Amino acid sequence: MTRRRIGRRCAAISLRVRAGRRPRIWWPPRCALRTKPARSANVGQLCRERFADGAFLVGFGTHTGTVAAATDWDGPMEIKRVRPSRDGSYERICHDSGVESFLLPLRPSDEAGLRAQLLEPRLERAIGVIYRPESELESHYFRAILPLQFDEYVWFDASAAVTPLATAEMEGMPATYPFGL
Image (cartoon, rainbow, N blue to C red; front, side, top):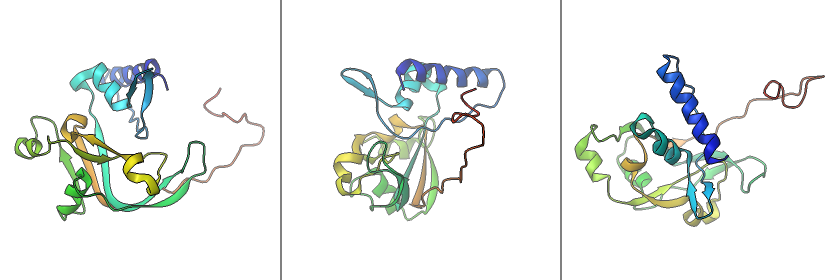
């Protein structure tokens, strides 16, 4: 998806909110988008650039569990076991809290003392449509400052893979129905 298309989608969400309509939640996988030859960005970064504090970014994390992901782009979905989080990562800090699930407010006005402690750069794990446990450190961890990346962080110590809905092709309808009309 191009930077322009993402900007338009973010603008459409913003207009719906200002018009008093409920916003649609757009939850893309955590993946980098090539926006310029020497720059990668994710949807959250692009929304933050466009809307500043008008964007509300929510991150999700887990220590272990299962995930529905492919090994390679265009590969089949597999249910994979998520490796336990690495020492020194944000995920390990959350796991070590001993709390199974929580919502962590990260905006400057929220929990100022806790937020300040989380401003140290640490490893963060990103699992999206691709998950490669065998090369997890290289493939899925990056250095981040959680309070500068998200406004809220949702934590589940153990996660379970989503179950895909059954689908069937409707007789006589185009493959893109109802979206390609």
